[in-house]
View 1 (cartoon, rainbow, N blue to C red):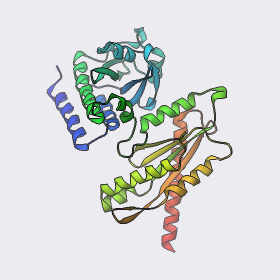
View 2 (tube, rainbow, N blue to C red):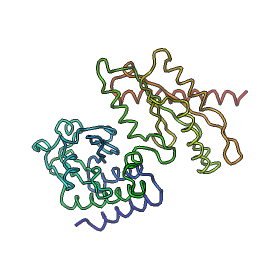
View 3 (cartoon, rainbow, N blue to C red):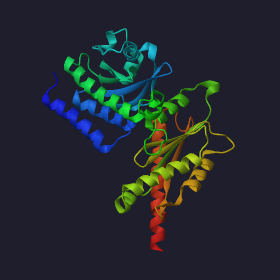
View 4 (cartoon, rainbow, N blue to C red):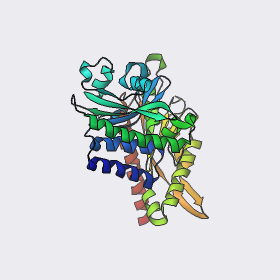
Length: 335
């Protein structure tokens, strides 16, 4: 049986979820993060079943860099868990024919527990704990993982109000802005990056940071800050194409996946269009507030073929733009 300390940790997680009023995507991210400490795992992931694939909808630890990853349901222990509805464990993935060994080696996991996630009497995904060591998990770890899976199932219930058609939408979209969340953004970026040969068309990632959100929250309160986030999301969406993925990655971070990038309209043109549409005052409860963002761009394959490096390049360019904005603001104030 789990220890009293471990059960108290589960209660703390439940309390944190209730107090914060987290949306489904945030609940899943919190659960996989807390799994690491709760059962001494090296990684954790929530995979949702969609169109024959298992999609990494939330990930932490060694699984963190693989958020948005898709694996064939038919070739994995997770898929078997979805089909059987049973708790499954692999004590040594190198000796287990049921697992996707290529994916296990890529992530670096050697043993795992896979717990079914049930929604409306149907298994819709799994909660998986991973270790870099073989035979790392015990029976009591299964009991603890089961308690966490119950928390996720409850969040699914309340998020969708028993409408199973909305489940994947709720799990992959930001609750405040209704934009794609980080997991859906990474899923689509991985798909674009995986295209080869004639299918490959130029694509770009824009990393966008909202300027001054902390000051808005501190000075006027979080209601104004949330309204500003929603307005930035609305303006980004309005200024983007249907084929683009506009996402809120968390906090004041947004991103846009431009796929494809038309040769006639370079990425610089798109960036300037976004600045023109997003920057400027907005009104909330009869008061005007200024909105500003900083944008950094990186393109596939010119800047990198590796998506982590691509995001890092875009992120560094975004911070350079932010520093330039601060310098111009300081120079203007000194005149």
